[in-house]
Length: 215
Length: 329
Image (cartoon, rainbow over all chains, first blue to last red; front, side, top):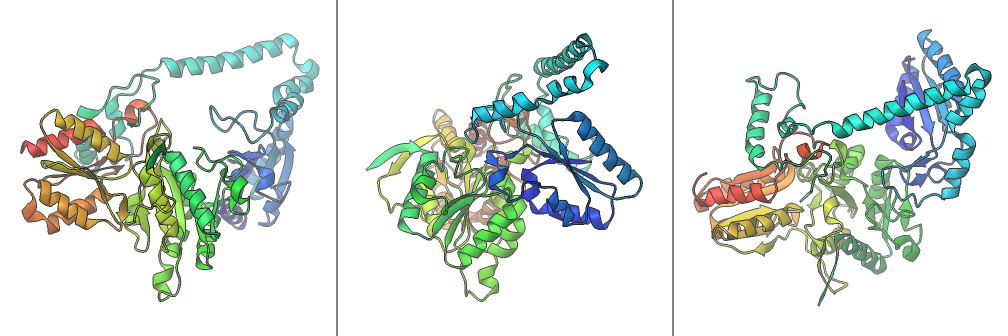
């Protein structure tokens, strides 16, 4: 299963891979999260089509369009794609129509869209709010609250874990690009160890969570 | 007369002046026209020159550079912004197999006056795929010019020279340099000639040959060395292809000891070419082996403590120079 955004679908490798998977009839599922923005550029400015999934047709690949804010609809569409893949039916393209709730990066000033647009879409489409409505009586308000808090706690714990974890040892910088025992007396690990010994006397002991100076 | 402006504004002035001077100059790239560039380096250009000459594009690097090559072949001077130097990898065929070779393969019947702008280098934890310095690859590719500005003056003068050059030119601009300010001459026709180095500091004991952001680090190292009574020359190459071999020979002849430094990976880097050249042509002038500094042979790590450990900065450069002068190498 391959996840990607709308921006990636204007790159050549996207097209090459759709064609390749189609002619080889591979059990692949292409899941497009079309959130309407590629970095700071609106998808409306970078393609003339409303539905990216029509591109799959050009490679002989079946495609589905699904409301990406609707978790059950996404589950159904992907379930059908998985069944096709498992049964030897080949690849499927699933376009999930969604929206980018946040900026492209932390601190993105988001000059490329209006705040009102974000509020309009998210107030009408928040998938969690929608799922609660869809579940109806299947989930009591208390159970929903409990799930909601459990999920938030899990995230908060993960953030806390990351924040409180020590920085890696500086020596780690010089190892890991190649396989094998870093202490082995083989060509690549000998070179890595030599570079470690050369750089370590000058490696600043930057504190955990701080940023490199770049100077 | 000169003014003090940021590196970013220096590149903006270069674009403005060259676009006013020559109607065939145009700019295209991702997130540049409406957004003004991630460093504000394109601010106001579409308002002055229109969205035809300052074009936002899809994420289609191969098509972008390919279109640039076509436009260049047919009489324009395209400037293609690669967003991050790392993304040139998505258009390597167009750069290496097309732009670099067309003039040679077609009997000098054509020119490819295209400029590729490539913000590069190590910043604040941009990660392995957004931090590279890749100039060495292009120095190794016959047919391309490669320039690497070190300050605002270089930024403006080299960009103007790149745009005016009839050869395909890669312009590597370090992301950490964009906000830094420096003097820039008050002259619409000021250019920094391609292939000419600049002596930033003249000292008799040791020469630090470098380029790009490492020039500032070398000057800082020279200040550290001063405290030890060591007088260092700092050579800012400005262009890494064609190299100013003459300036390198002169620096060796004056100091007899050389440190070559860059932020790019040391192994197989531009420094290797320079050190080998000195070994071949200036052997008798040397009082010590050439010391070559560059990043360790690993991807640029994300964690700040790892990132800051693996590339040369002023203390490492100063240490190498000090050991050379004290005959410890």
